[in-house]
Length: 498
Image (cartoon, rainbow, N blue to C red; front, side, top):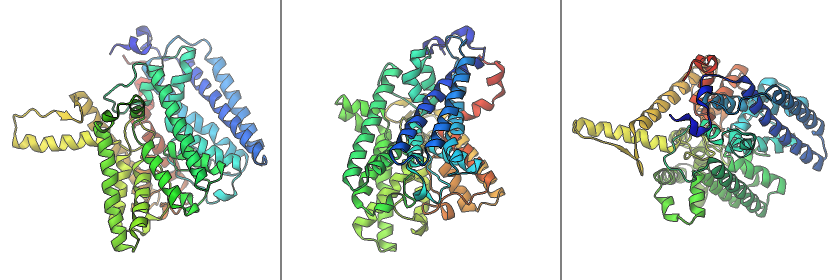
């Protein structure tokens, strides 16, 4: 690999710079302190009940940022790829640690375990909550919950692509660390330019949905908070009942639409803005995602009509919403699917596993990986019948063996980590079904699970050990497994890599 193209000096490739890592983390914490300051403003607008908690949190975060920046001021000129990976992984942890201060200092979540879980769930856009008293929370805290998801949705490092190049940091290097998923076309030759386009699309979708929700009867505050959580495919709500609180078919359809839009590869919006509409439907992953969501909605709608006595429109709306929330890893709820026919649970679990498209804010394995795995299985059967046949993997374009191997290894690692997490949760007393669904939900950054941790319940009843395990799984899923595991690899820190 030619490391020069990523702004990495060859003679730096074997020298881990802790000062550079500290400097980048310091910049990101400075950004988080600005987010906390924004929440101070929101708190002032709505009575200031949580103002002190946010003011102190902002001050502590800014002080930590300054110390790290001072320590790292004599940094080298460019990061190695390992430093970029480390910064990405640690940034989520640092954001979570300082992001939980408002909950703790204000006494809204007095337990460190619960505060860490809630904050990690926000920044990883998982949407699982331990709060049973959301309606009693002040406006600043509610806004902070949604803001953590909005920031986490596009990725802390995605903001770095736009901001950090001004400080001499290679944006391509940082982007590769976050986007470890499969990409097979490059819309924009410059990563920084592409990030800015994507950020503009992100804001535009948020503003449009906010306006539509306001028209549908939400207050401006609720509309903004829910649009931030939707576009980030997060799922935090300002109401304990989630979207079901409004009993509005209009709001349910609007949120369903924007959940699905947010699970599409954001680079395709740039294609659309350029007028290449035909190229959109030529995207195999988009067709797979749309077909999967449509088929699951049709099957579940039919089941609800035949088994639960729903009317046609209600069955379609409820099933569409829940398929969208699971397939996009958003986590909102309008109905308790624990009361649906049990076979529909497995369809929703499949949707959670599949997730959305690569290059989107959604979680899960991602549809393009699922396509490649499906093609590998199909080709293996064909190979048995035609031993000498050469069977390439195609999904719009042909994938090389290295990429296919990477996807298969990822799939195996994903399932292995999920199985380990499932086993650990059962060891701490969580039931079989609940353990399976919460692990898949946490790794896929979805939110609700099954049984007593379904959409009608919080996750507060989980043992503390289980919450730490699930918090780790949220981060593992968000960093695409390898980005997380790399920081535990001895060679990463010893400098014995090339």
